[in-house]
Length: 439
Image (cartoon, rainbow, N blue to C red):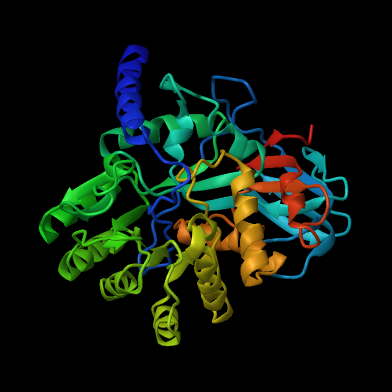
């Protein structure tokens, strides 16, 4: 098995290296950040893998005892006011109880002292191309610790929205193994970007390898079923007629988009659409997509915002990658949020040379605050609850409430007073297991 896996990963890395070669890190990738709303048939929750002690290669069963976090201020991700002197009781991988004051501590419990820090849900980056985190630049070496910076810094879930088709099964398997060993965040995968023959991203050399072309609605439906069977929870569409001065790229037809979204919804999947312009948004809306990957870089008309709200469309940000259009994108995100829409924080890692970890998320959040006036609480909700919504995990993650998976972080200081506190992570708990601090 080791030899077979080595051969698979060698092939994976050669192809992925070709996909990444020559990437201009100063030019924003048109790759999308999806956002999704609950649909009629939600997917069944996946049971988290049993935790593993740090540094161990062999999984072990979860400890039978409870875990109690005490002595912190709770920001639960719902937008509710902070709860002082808070405690959170965890049993195995789930949150059992949340309150304020002195909890009744079970006799078998381990106590984690937040030391007057802020207790938060694990953060979620709603748009990444995280497979590149497996590559050591220059020698195409598997970097098994490539995902560690996210987890160590409190980003416990990533939504990956563009993977080379031939690599998808092997990368998904490897990432699941790393998560099992607490060396990676949870990753929600879309697989490749579904596009028209000759459409985006085949039109951009740096991103062409993550495309999968379809020539008919029937072919598109077959691909949706294949991706669903392979572990995708999101389907991503490449709806890009061209950006900046290069236009005229082929687009999926309305019939094809509609067939894809209907097939995805039947499988409990959400559909995100890579869009930048208003006519692309129009196609996504008419075809039944659930969310917009990227905030559009053209001003959204009020009537389109109203229609998006009626349809329950969500939106991921990636606003600070667009150069001159970044301010328009940030303003669109805030207008949609103020109108009642769901907006999730997203970075588009690794389009523009971002490092893995919290730094890119903090930069995006600071940009949204400075340019568009997002409050700190709005940004925290966008990076937790709303990230779970667009990741098709709203019933499992994103808030600190009884019954949710115990992805919990503690940061020093108060992020409501200074967002910079989000980079001072002192404790990270992944599915009920302490993986950073708290010892």
